[in-house]
Image 1: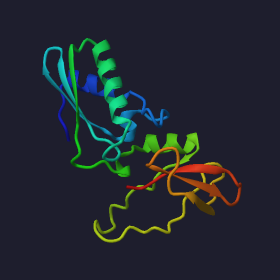
Image 2: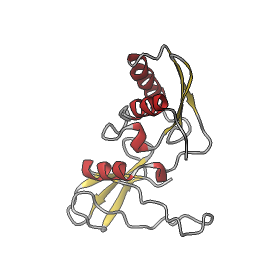
Image 3: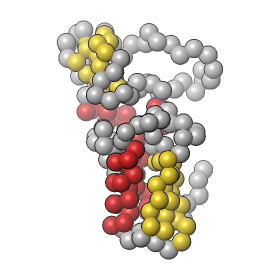
Length: 168
């Protein structure tokens, strides 16, 4: 458990409320990319951010949006650090984030089974539930969709196309 000062809690909430530029239905806290906020001195803060994948083009926009929000809150100096370890995983998406993705029409990634072994092959032939009708009779149209972290699928039952947030 991370212990934060009340100011760090407030700044974390502000930074966490920034919408993801590629999935604006989620904020950065729900997406799980916001790793921490440290107040270094009065008006001076460092924010740690982990991209969904190395080279994610949205990191620059996320950083600029965090800087803007915290500057508006009186922080004179805001440094956003990109942290690559530990790597982001789809397990970092909050339950609320998963709910919002499904409500928005994007099949959320399946949560990791904590009781399963942590090493070994990742199953590739898993069913993906249609966010429109709930059917698991879906087909892959393209391994990549509007962003590299999503695949394009279609429901065989209702015929609606939808994005699926890939498990990482």
